[in-house]
Image (cartoon, rainbow, N blue to C red):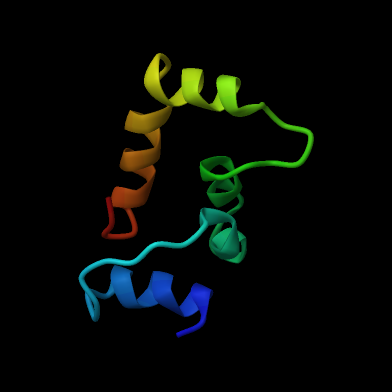
Length: 70
């Protein structure tokens, strides 16, 4: 299955789960780029701080809930 097809399969519950990089779905919305590494963006330490100490994880899960995912 192609990686962008995995998103659609999970979203429609054709499959239970999958693992892919969020930026493959950038065409569905630019916010998907924020769930993965961005060139010249934050380093690993910054990404971890945003996800764990900021509201990054909660905001990301709220965003994905609109696509029937978590």
